[in-house]
Image: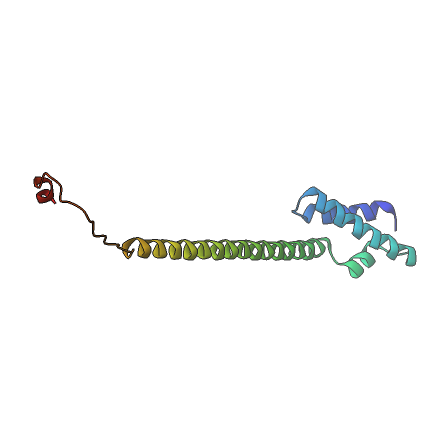
Length: 136
């Protein structure tokens, strides 16, 4: 099979791919490597043989894009899982802080409101100005 037909076949596949150029390049390099191996084993293969072995260009591109979409979905699921774990830990830490601070507040309020009162009786003489005592 002449190289012109191989390049035509790969170009058709490339035209069907709607993904970033780097991904296209990697995929086409791998595919070309596989085709070269096939052609080494079958030197008299035609373009029809390639289509029979690897599939038509539209089908190859579609299967690749479906696989890439699946990888994107998996990555989004992993990312979502990480975000959920981080939020769970943050909520746990905030809840623990709220419980601890709430406990400290309750203990402090109880101690303040139910403190000890010491009554002391003074000994000695009454103050000379008894009007002061009447204020109280």
